[in-house]
Image (tube, rainbow, N blue to C red; front, side, top):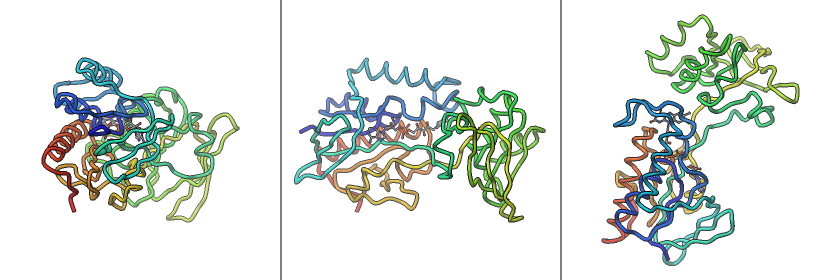
Length: 309
Ligand SMILES: Cc1cc2nc3c(=O)[nH]c(=O)nc-3n(C[C@H](O)[C@H](O)[C@H](O)COP(=O)(O)OP(=O)(O)OC[C@H]3O[C@@H](n4cnc5c(N)ncnc54)[C@H](O)[C@@H]3O)c2cc1C
């Protein structure tokens, strides 16, 4: 039996693994891939010690640090977690089994989908969840950005450099992005704001997106927008299904509820980073959270495991 299994190798899980290794703990880090969302982050300007660093480079640095300390992540997906009389049994996609005293969820988050016809069919063929990766592919064409929060506005801010016209859609009465970003983006001649609108369907020619069926909720009117790209920026969905299967309490947004020491409502189950109810969803906060969680695990394995309840 291991002392700990860390699930997820984004900033939270990597940070936890570094602390665990330095504490000489018997642990396993299992992750689908190394880096998590950071791989898609593009240029990062808000991590302490780096004025600017590319996401892929940042992930490389984290890998170098793990390697230097001797952390060997297992590339696999945890598909099931069960509580045993003592500890937990974890099963992975490749069929391996691991037993540990405690589990630390660093499973992060994924983009929410629109859940409309055509979205799945045209993902990667016009529908994108990563403006930093895909914006340059939409040179001199019309595109739609769905979501009027900070990430929607940041997507538009990047697309202004490439696209011909950018429709910016928000289902609510107002855009929710920060004032500075709002002023910058909405002053561009290329941007067409569409408040109180929603997407009904994404249409194409079987190969690429050609248009989007939208509804103007105020005028009760349905019409078609001719666009070749749809950037979906409607928020994040925490990866909390496995934790929930253990009975861990979550918020309405399905975030794992933790206390300030990263304990969940279930004994022996800990969580850190974007999968939790911590308000700030950033690299620096996830990394700090992973470190903090590991120190709690270490403390509890030494002095007694308990939940926040
Ligand atoms: C486009 C974009 C730009 C961003 N820009 C910035 C920025 O400039 N600055 C900033 O601070 N933050 C930025 N962020 C946010 C930042 O990347 C996240 O807050 C941070 O990565 C969260 O770290 P995490 O470790 O909690 O989760 P994640 O990075 O989501 O990592 C979770 C990991 O767990 C793995 N995983 C999930 N479930 C399982 C399972 N069952 N089995 C095995 N592995 C599993 C996932 O595959 C992933 O590798 C950006 C995010 C995006 C998407």
